[in-house]
Image (cartoon, one colour):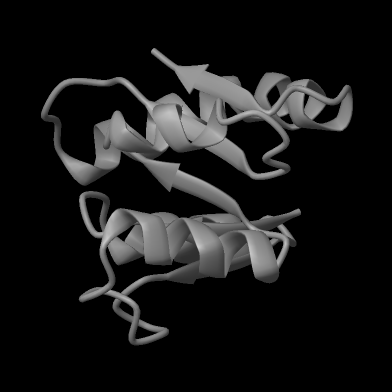
Length: 109
């Protein structure tokens, strides 16, 4: 899978995803950290990437009629990076299966 990790989440998450064989970029790594949400969404859509963010605005973009984008909505409260990565490790197989089954919005709670 291809992921684009938003600036509200650490670059270590993109590295964690890459370590598991996925194509993942953090917005800082790809120079997209100054993009607004709509431009970031359009870029992710053009690159067939799943946006990974805590930003609820992407939920509204993902639910636009005819939109083919995908969104992994991280709904964890503020936490340390190790707690974030532990939550991803615990739920990641389920997240991948949900996207593989055609879901366009998946929540990590």
